Image (cartoon, rainbow, N blue to C red; front, top):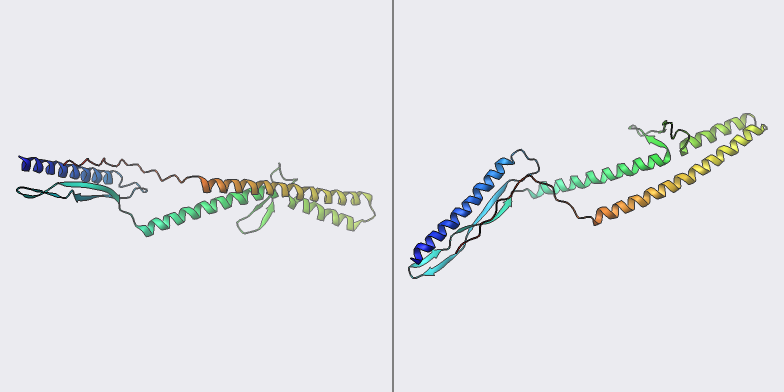
Length: 206
């Protein structure tokens, strides 16, 4: 009878292991079009053997684990690409904030132009510099005119105020970016969601 019980337990364990293998295969087929899914395989192994009066008997087959079939080189490249995307996205956001503080936009050809939006058309260092240069031209044409003198002083004052305001804005942006970077470093990374349900591992019977 002990031999019969051992054979039955061994068969049950083997059937449970094959059930995990079948479930894993079905899971692979269900996620065949899922780009974030990695194919899985079942690691099968034996539970060893025991010595009986009739000789050594196997304790049965068991599914040890379900493992993903992944390429370490490709995984490394994906991680590096994700890191680069995050870096350039953060850099783009920082540049956009700096451009907003300066009241300018940068074109795709590398040239810069003063923002023409009505809400900021009269602000920005570029606009203030244009106003100062225009005042200098008017002053050079008529240096004795009190009106041009006053306009020049006003343009210089406007540029000074704009430089101070921009410096304060850039300092706030820098503080915000530092806080964001510290949060990104300390925040635990969330693993990619995968639409699959891993089959339950059977409990081996002895």
